[in-house]
Structure formats: structure tokens, C-alpha cells
Image (cartoon, rainbow, N blue to C red):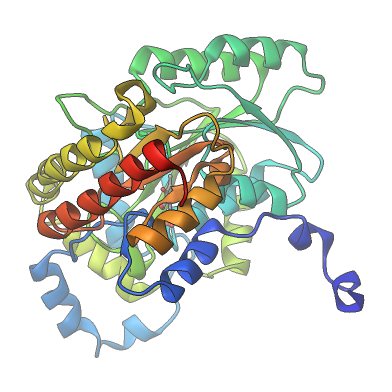
Length: 393
Ligand SMILES: Cc1ncc(COP(=O)(O)O)c(C=O)c1O
């Protein structure tokens, strides 16, 4: 008790990371299969790994690099942003993953006490980034009950009524944990609202390549928009920690302020990780597309496994690597259901309460190869059938 008094309220009042709690559950359970963590099962491109293996002896790999990223990677990213994302006026800062990119942005764009906007269900780490930087006035807007897309009417009302106007609005496209994407007209409307009311719009595009059923991911740019990206999922580079910020070059001083934060947290993203990112980009889009296309099989297996909850209960899966499912009404304590599923059926999912969605669960379909996913889907289905039929016995 005494020690707690000596710890910062900023940290104490930040949620406990759900993944840490889930990892504990996995360690305690014997032979549990995880549909919990937002990961992919593949490793980075083989040729890229071979190239960095050879590069490790170069002295430059062990030195600090430019804070904003190694020039070759930034140059390649600027080309990629133009060709793939239709972003032509962006500068790039390479970070130690998209999570660090988000923290850089919150520290650069927000002051403690500012209000900010997110939409439920939200990405838990973004929520925590606000909390731990003192941005505790977090307004959580609703998603459309059918599509889970951000409710732009609510945003318009909130931005017009709230004084001072919220400093920043953030969306994830396609979404974690919703697994749904934001169509271009809706993204444009959100952007126009932010521009008109003077709020920043931060768009997390971590899952830009993870789109299914012919849907297309889009980015938009403006002097009020910052786009975030990650190498973690597309290239199976979770542990290498490389992401980047595409910020509007025309905003005076923004790059300089971002650099202050960068210089005090990682100094620079790991150089060997950046080199791997560069060589992974050289593989081209087809490398990612083949792998993403294959995930549809996992998604379908898990959609089928969730059927005991009822067809209307299951949303998402049109983008990212997630399905989002509503538990029967009496199970508002979703964490209890998650613990029960681990204990009695050996399958792990994420409780919706971690994303502002109590009574729901998030299921990830990226982390397992098809054969393992089939086993996990079988366990999940049996667990949910029992839950609906007999309860948590
Ligand atoms: C929406 C979203 N943003 C950021 C991240 C973190 O990405 P990175 O590994 O690049 O930090 C994740 C990881 O799950 C994510 O789902």
C-alpha cells in the first residue's frame, strides 16, 4: 500500500495490459491453443532474412542511426506511400513499431488534460497510451451496431458541442478488435469533420493489406491527418519492432517536435530491424497477398465455430485478423467466460471489456496455420455450444 503512494498516478491509473493477463492464463493452462494475440503465423521473407544475416557484421548495424530512420528505408517508404496509399505530401519517421508511433504522436499532439476521441470497440493500446500520458478525458463514441463502423453523426455532434474541441480523433482501419474496415466516403467524412472543427485525425493502418472479399483499403491525406503503419503483421516482423509515421510535410514544426520524442524514447528504431524492413519491401506485394488470402480459410473455420452464438452475434472479418462476437446476454462478465474457455476447453480468446466492449469476445484468425486453427475452432465450437446449452459448468 505504502509503496503504491510513491508510484505515478499516470501509471497506476492506466489499464493493465490485457495481453499480459492473457499470457498468464496461457502459462497456467496446459496445452491451451491461442486465438488471442493479434499476430500472424508466418516469418519474414526468407531472402530478406538471409540478407540481414550477412549484414550483422557491418559496423553501422551496431551504431545509432538517424533518429527518423535510415535514409534508404525512408526513401523506399515515401515511394510506397505514393504508389500504394496515394499519399503524396507525407514525411516519414520510422519507429519501433506502430505502438511507439502512436505514443510519439500523443506526446507531440496532445497535452495532459486534453480531450480525445476513439470509437468502441477500440484498440486497447491506444487507450492506454492516452491514459499514461495524462490524456484522461477519453470520449468513446459508438460504432454502428450493424457494421461497427465509427458513428460519424455522433462525431459531428461531439465536435460541435464539446468545448474546448477534442484535440485528436483516432480510428483504426481496418479495425482491431472490430475486424471491420472504414469505407472511403466515411473516412472522408470523419476527416472533413476533424478539419472543420480543428481536431487532428490519427489513422492506424497496421492492417492495410489485410482486406478480404474484394474490399479495398484507402488512405487519405491532409494537413490535419497523420497515418500510422506497421511491418509487424504484413511481413511477420512482430519481434523486429518496425513501424512508421506518415505525417503532413506542410505542417511547420511537426517533424521537429516528433524528433524530440523519438530522440528520448528509442533514439532510433533498431537498425537491423530497419534493414530487414527494407529488404522485405523489396519482395513486393505479392508476397503478402498470398499469405493474407490464405487466412480466409482460418476466418471461415472460426466463423463456423462461433455459430452457436447465433449468426447475428458475429461481426468483423472483412479486414484485419479479427472476429468480434457477442456472448449471450447473461454473460456480461466476458473475462469470466474467457477464463472458463481456457480452463475447460483449452482455447484462448480476448475479452471484449479490454476494448470497451463488455459482453463480447475477440477472436484472432492470424496466428495459427490452418491445421492448428481447425483444432482451435473445434475446441471453441464445443465450448460455445456448452456455454449456450448448460452454462459455465
Ligand atoms: C491496431 C494496431 N496498431 C498497432 C499495433 C502494434 O503494432 P506494432 O507491432 O507495429 O507496434 C497493433 C498490434 O496488434 C494493432 O493491432
